[in-house]
Length: 145
Image 1 (cartoon, rainbow, N blue to C red):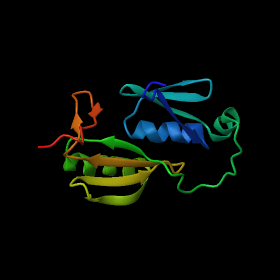
Image 2: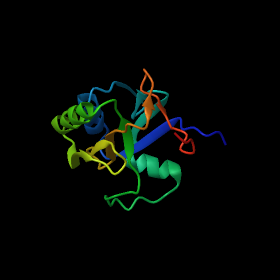
Image 3: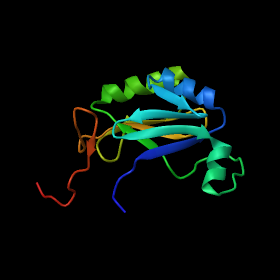
Image 4: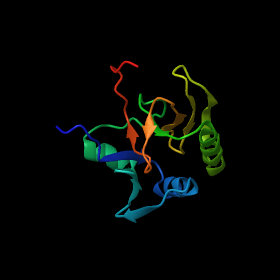
């Protein structure tokens, strides 16, 4: 198996509500057959009915919300950008679950939840390099300075 991710699909309760939320964040997508595709750099974020996603994956969805053991993250180029994007998310209707603050790794980060409770981290990490297109490169942690 190649070490890459092509799509991240979020199961949502109300497709139009979720599409509108992500549009308020400034994302643009295409709706095809009750599915919204949003280009996100080299991969796609997909919004699809939660019930349809569960059925397609062959799992039962008890319909309970709460922490699912996963977050999505967007790394940015500065502390100011963290503050700006968390403000944009809050204005779009997100619940800020943790305001921006210093991190244990010397960075600065905050979290918000989208309308379906999917958690997003917005982070500035001085140890991660971002390319001009926002592509993150994981540093070689074994390298010595």
